[in-house]
Length: 391
Ligand SMILES: *Cc1c(COP(=O)(O)O)cnc(C)c1O
Image 1 (cartoon, rainbow, N blue to C red):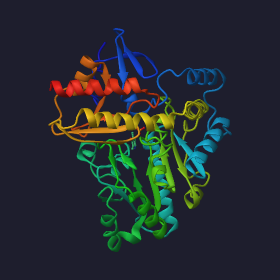
Image 2 (image 1 turned 180 degrees about the vertical axis):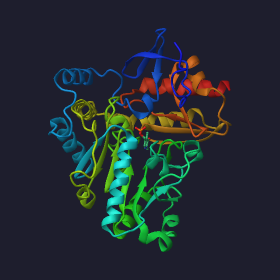
Image 3 (image 1 turned 30 degrees about the vertical axis):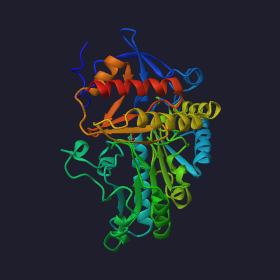
Image 4 (image 1 turned 60 degrees about the vertical axis):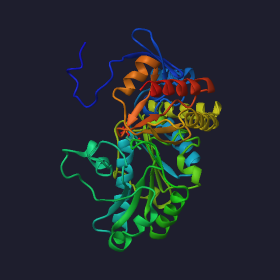
């Protein structure tokens, strides 16, 4: 078997998993691994959750797809559930995070258009990541993802993350063209970065005052990952537009764009669409994921285990010469190192049976499943400590 027929966009580890259960994965040799990355913030309720397996199997035997030409019961159920949890008014369903953000960016454009702005600008943050389509790449930062793609479509004003004064200093020049602000409440790909307390609330007030849409990309931070349903709820902030994906389907591809107030009135029949978006299988899976999170009290667990993991990492790695900062919220944790040792991710898997990830070169990123327990938290801590001490 060879990967020669695949476009070389990733450099996968030579590990091939063929079974997962809860927080564990097994490779072809039958070796067990503790999953501390959850498919990049996707499998929050764990692998092969029996209730999800049952719901997907039943739906597969009933109906996979009918198209958005017809009412879709599970889509309506999911929209009602999600908008209720988020304090939003309505939803549009996509197949991925990037697509959900494209939906949000189209809402921003329409909002600008109705405001009579000829060349609308969307404010985005330094070090942001919003996806890999041309539109969402334009909203993202960093040569690593943008290099070689030429002039990207769309007009964006990039400002420092978490710095309201920096944004305000642009208003005199760009204010009349701004129609929206798009940001991650917790920056994931750039190494788990949190905005200072109060920033989101102040940004919410600024957006309301100036009639800009506040659009929050909760694709990584949402669906319980931060210990609340959505990270913005820690600050008591409700956006005008919110995007979701990753943890929503627990592995079944689904994205969502939620809108509220005037943002919920912008689309009209024909102004946006998707062939697969919101199909019965994906929506029933997502409904079931939300039910499981509620039934098993996984928000409280993510809060508790996340706080424990952060505390134990800080205790155990205290004074370590290589560790610059340990930060995070809920089960979104970054350990920034001075220098990233070579092959750290491979070593973690091979020598410690631990699946982790590294972002932006120098930060170990932990995104364990929301179902993780105390014993497993300690396994992650001990694995990482042994590994960092060896180096
Ligand atoms: C993963 C991610 C995306 C892109 O989602 P895809 O499903 O890969 O298109 C967008 N925004 C954030 C914050 C993400 O973490």
